[in-house]
Image (cartoon, rainbow, N blue to C red; front, side, top):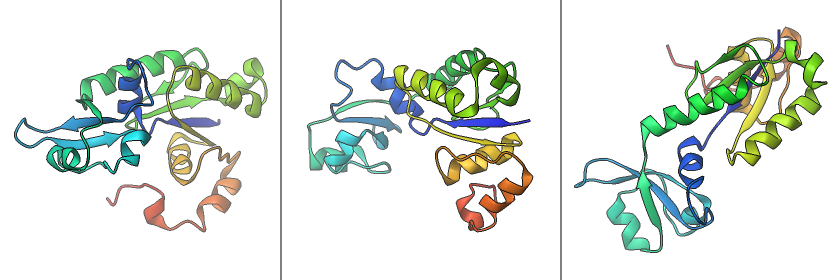
Length: 181
């Protein structure tokens, strides 16, 4: 079997920006109590103004007032994940949301329908881009390996255990995104 992991690194921001009149305007997503608002995520335009995740709203406003803000909404993230999982069922009968902000799809059985992996991958990317979701994709012989590969880089593919080992052997363990336990 081959599994694709589609990492959605900016899922919260992408979900909010889908409803913005101008998604290129500076935007910060906020968390915390009204007395202690924290910047959770920023888009590239807000980052260019000096805003960054972890910053207090007060510090961000001291840098500039030229940005919009919205709530970092965990329920909305879950809804977007469910939406994208439903979309993914159009490509595979086996879809999983096991990892946060990731879609796992068994893709080997779909290659006969969607063509060789490069064509299939291009279609997935085109549709995700049309839906305005940033993404990274990697493929491996099992879901956990695909998740690890997508941490290493976008577009990686290991067809079998030997290829996977060759990709993973030189990597430091902390770069793989594995739990310490």
